Length: 281
Image (cartoon, one colour):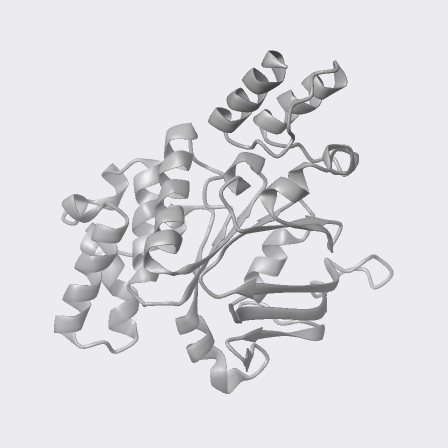
């Protein structure tokens, strides 16, 4: 697959920061393939949210370049096309709600893009159906649960018909049920509708179904690969103050106790099967 986003040797520091301190992003390079589900992991202060804001031109690099479908985010003439290509969903859905009715909220961005009314109606209905919120179209957003609000926020981005959605810690303020709703929604959008998904998170379990994982620490990408490959490096991740999914942590402890179980078993079902097989030997 062709990359839809290319981050090339990007460095960045916020205005007013101490010039002697390390930059927030320090020569970061990565590629995101079109149609893939990518997770960028890291603890607070790792630079992952700053990187997310570079992926559709909210921030631009001090050094290096970010290309979105070949368009340089530093090119002001391309900024609207870049943001039509890459939509952003942020941590707090309340900050993205602008209307008193769900369907009006989802219609807001297409209206501002000058989309004809008939097409707006079709886009809003389709977007709400894709995230499983069509039956709530005439509700007031403040009456929804956190997970439902976040799905409406995602629908608002989908209505712009982007090729890629970047979600910056969208589950950070949600309970486990809401987190599950959001992850299932974006996974389905990627797998069934071909939308590129870039999920920024510190919840390791949310990366289990990804195609590729990038791990950040102190402004650097310190590990990348499939979830199985990245999470098998348990000691290296723990040295960075990062955890691993519960299934991997359990398998790691069992291996330390002498049981030959696979670290690559990430789901509970696969982990249980691996343990059962090891016990039969």
